[in-house]
Length: 102
Image (cartoon, rainbow, N blue to C red; front, top):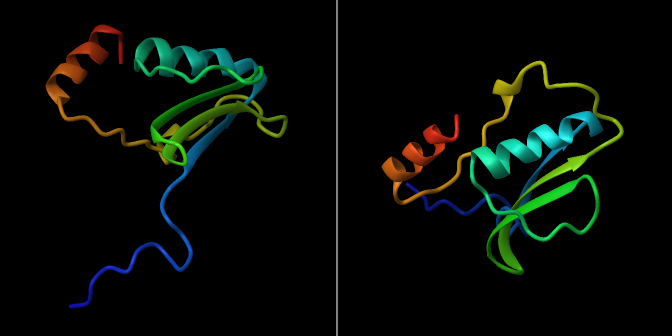
């Protein structure tokens, strides 16, 4: 059996994931990830843009939520995308998120 060689030639890892949303959905997305999930956003650089980062630049991973004029309404199939966040204390985190309605 051979060793896993990584995701492909020239790729160093995952830099981030972007969720594009409609302007009217941005505040609901912000509220969910900040107020309910409990993530701490980086300082805002522009309106309609929210970023969360793990690690130290340039070797960090970011989750970005941004407004895109090509996106309209709510996602009709939200189950298509799942983000798996790492925790070393699942019981504590699950209790905290449940207390915030997640």
